[in-house]
Length: 109
Image (cartoon, rainbow, N blue to C red; front, side, top):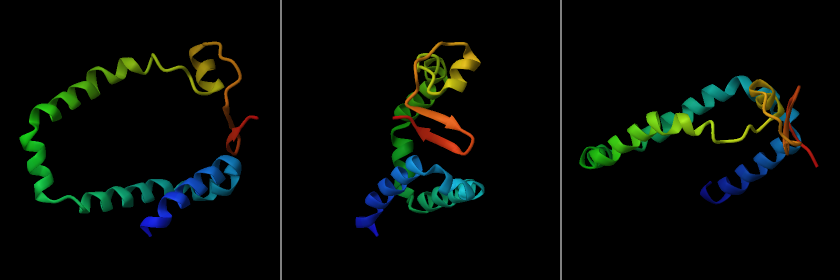
């Protein structure tokens, strides 16, 4: 499974960009599948991992501080990625490479 996961993930991502309509029926399952993935990742944690967090409390504190103080203002430095975002913020943008459509996203040539 380890050998085929990366190529499978890349192939599914490419297929989703090319034929996004194929994946629309799976939309209701996304939150459940993400929860399952997060649960699985949590099950791999060991007590040693938590000891590492306590030992490096300064780094954890710095990360939390940056997450809630630095990251929110940085969102205004990132240009809008879609025409809808630009229209909402009234920012003129040139043709976006990926545009939102009724059935998902489509890639413009």
